Image (cartoon, rainbow, N blue to C red; front, side):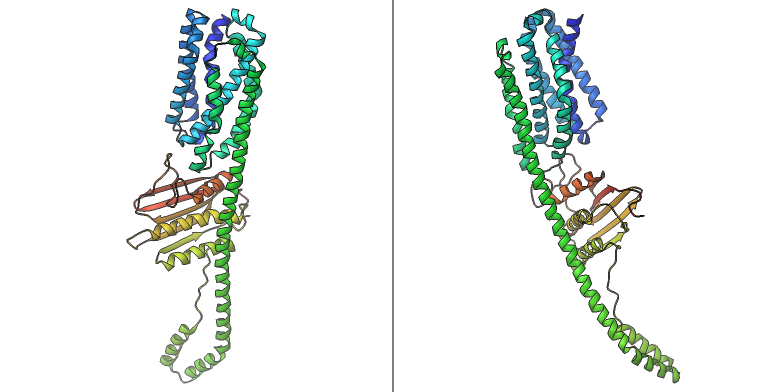
Length: 448
């Protein structure tokens, strides 16, 4: 009975512990719900288990000849399933697949070593008992560390949209995986029982994880540098707009001083018209005086000076190119999201909208901006004219850059900030318009 149970358990331990974490870190890109993926993997493992049970009916020696072939066959099937079920770049899928396969070879190798070196005679009587038990023990020991690495370092790295970087990144775990696959063809039991074999397994996994970690940290620093450059760019534009506003206000104040100085003379003229009861002349004089008053040219979209200045900057850019610009900015007076990060979101949205309108040929373009708070969310919406076709990436949710291959730096920065504050993004094109939506989670008391 115990031997039959171990035969049936063998295929489940081959795939379930390594397949589920992979779909979990890609859960935002799944075409079906995660629980259905669990059901599907369980069903496939049941089929694998039944097939493995059948080949073991002819004895352990006969089954050993088919075990490696079955493993690779179901590995390939699981790889194909992931391409069908996950909307993600090929390189990212291969990176996570090979990384988890390296971990599986580490677990298998340790179990082979324990069985071959210490329990070989016992395994002759109960072929899969020690091997399965060792795998379960090793999984329990390594699972917390691997899940932490996947949930933090790898999952954060998957947010990077640099295709060129991923072309190199996915090859890091490839070589250790190929080395592990090479050992699967070895039939000499003494090869598994050597300390050299065990050490090689540790070096394979630790080397893969360490190199991946260092590579990802370097990329994180590079990404942060790029984001700081974005923040600096839009901060400069905000300061430029504030400087122009200050100059405008100063000129406006000078005109007001002059108007106030001339007010006595104007009142004297008005008094003379009243004394002569010359209503027609008074009316004509007042109309002339109105044209000499300083105009109200200060634009105020919201009370936050940084955000208001940035909106004014792009409003002037739009109007300079005869693009109709409309903005409604109900921005909270106190917001826990730093102005530098809000300017990255707002600056990228408006910059992309202006550039899209400049590419239009019909000349009738418009941009509409709305910023408002809805419950615990801070929402940014931009609508702009866009008659050309906008390419999207494989998941159909993220627009690709018109200046470079892959997703643009600006869109990547927006998505990263939205993720950081528990929000999301939505980009879509329809009926000659492009709609961009960004929302961030903010505390209810943020503007109290």
